Amino acid sequence: MFTPTSKNGLRALKVFYGLFVVFLYTPIVLLLLFSFNSGQTPVFPLKSFTLRWYRELLANHELLGALRTSAEVAAGSSAVAVSLGILAAIVLVRRRFFGKGAVSALLISPLVVPYVVFGISLLILFQALSIPLSIITVMIGHVVLSLPYTILVLVPRLERIDVALEEAAKDLGASGWRTFRSITLPLILPAIVSAFMIAFTLSFDEYAVASFVIGRQVTYPIYLFSQLRFPSRLPQVIAVAVLVMTASILVILGTEIGRRMAERKLGAELESGPAGQL
Amino acid sequence: MAVATPSEAPAAADAARPGRFRSWLAAVGILSPPVSWLVLFFLVPIGIVAAYSVGALSFFPGDQALSLGGWERFFRGSIYLSLFWKSVRISLTVSVVSVLLAYPIAFFLALGAKKRKYVLLLVIIAPFLTSYLLRVLAFKVILGDEGLINTFFYSLHMRSPGHPIPWLLYSQFTVMLVLAYVWVPFVALPIFVALENLDQSLLEGASDLGASRWQTFWRVTFPLSVPGVMAAFVFVFIPTIGEFVTPLLVGGTRGFMYGNAIADLFGPGFDWQTGSVLALFLLAVTAALALVFGRFLQIRSVAAE
View 1 (spheres, rainbow over the protein chains, first blue to last red):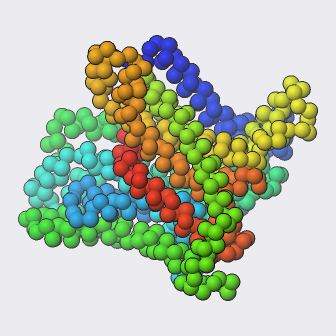
View 2: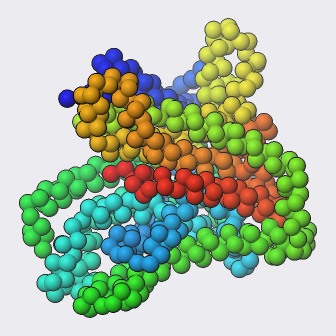
View 3: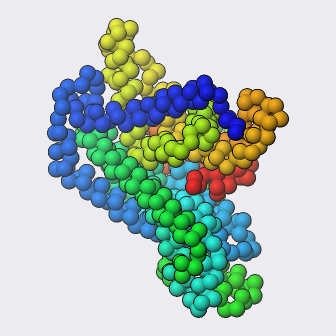
């Protein structure tokens, strides 16, 4: 059996990986540290341990409001993006048609447009149509940004589902909608959840595009950015950041583990005979 | 509306394999919601920007009526063009450094680590999914005048307090460091996928034919991973070339980038026409890149299964 690295090579790679993880996590750990530090500014040496910033942020209505707005924007935009993504992915995987190449290029193209360009384009569009800026306009933008990601998650999943399952359902008299609901949808559910989580995280954290099309009611990243100018607010900002970061890492780990478990179960079921599915 | 549409297509297909035309019609039917969304909120806005850049459209009195003047000024040695090249240099450096850092990681995960590779990959990806602004902010804590690095030097008496290392924060270096930090986890993904999908028997074949590990790497493994590397490169270069948030936070005046100029023209600078020219030029560059590298940007190159 060929091993691509020598023992020492593998050891070197392991060390490099370790250093890399340290590099990636040092800033995050520092934020965690300073969120419990009683000093007004995040500088060394550390002062004493405190929960003051966490207490204060719970009383900061502006901040809580911004978090809530972001959650709404993220939930709305990911729901739309995932619905649109399911439609697109099903057609891209299951059908051949004239112009497929162009359509899939269009669906993926928001990935290769710098956010600043997209942001100002939307701003000009809304200005041209005299649509007032609000969280709705931010949501519209976020759907465009998330859509390619949802398709990228859903397509490989759909490809792995045996078309015979859907065909069998139809042969047994199921309507198109029923086939989708009872066969396709349950099978791609883990991927739908992943796609939703990715879209949600993207939107919840999105600053660049939102900064151009936001109205009076601000989202969490916009609020955060505006607070960075006031040094006295920094500890609170760091504390809320730690909370949001922890929550998002937990949610992502949770869905990822859930998805893998579901995939394993699905794999076992498919191997034991697709007939069991119907 | 979005949920009801899937019923049409399979139903249409069900109608005894109709003609190709009906099948095509069904595909169009299901595709129309996502495609129209992108046309309306993505393609049309870009078209409007193009119109605005030549004065075919104007909302404010300062704009010039129908002329290529904006474009002419842009190409005739404006400060914006040199700012563009500066941003290209920054982005190129960031992309190259990120790829160089990410390659060994992806190699280790795909070919070195055995069972736990997905867990180890997740460890690398997780920071990418946390707040972008906050990771940038963290660097202010590290690189600031009273930050981790400067206080470390103060405590060793290698620098006296009040005299921090000048290029550590608010410089081009800082922008590049932070951008590389932010993007490197994302870069590892497509390279990992390319290496992971590599046919291992090719490596064994090379070694059976007498190639050393090093030769196997350069003659087989690396060439086969080039598509992943290319995809990774483009996926960092495109977002970083238009970057404006990171320079705003850690770049100072020296780290000012092309994206900042665009954001400024649509903000305090208030010259939407020039801004449209700049934005459209940037879009043309990234679109050209995407076309050239398009064949590497397969769906599977970013979708880690």
